[in-house]
Amino acid sequence: MAFMCDICGKRPLVGNNVSHANNKTKTRSNPNLQKVRASVNGRTQRMLVCTRCIKAGKVTKAA
Image 1 (cartoon, one colour):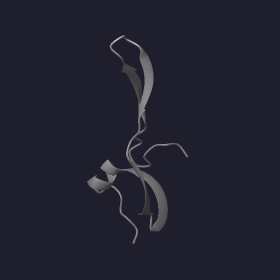
Image 2 (tube, helix red, strand yellow):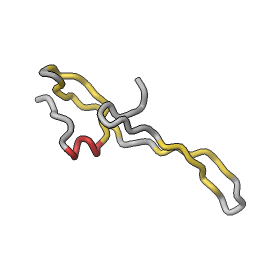
Image 3 (tube, one colour):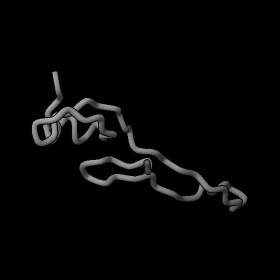
Image 4 (cartoon, one colour):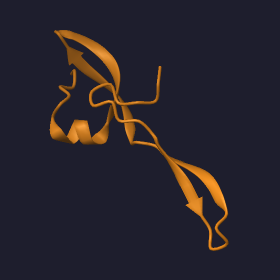
């Protein structure tokens, strides 16, 4: 299971922290993923979904 949103495909961003002395160290910013019980095609299924998709209403939560 990859660390990505099951709906929009959002993944971690990779970049560099650059110091004043121009030293570069790798940094990684992860998306805010939540485990959600969602109904997909009439069945409940556990999904990793980013909070932007949850707020936009792209996920119908299972009761």
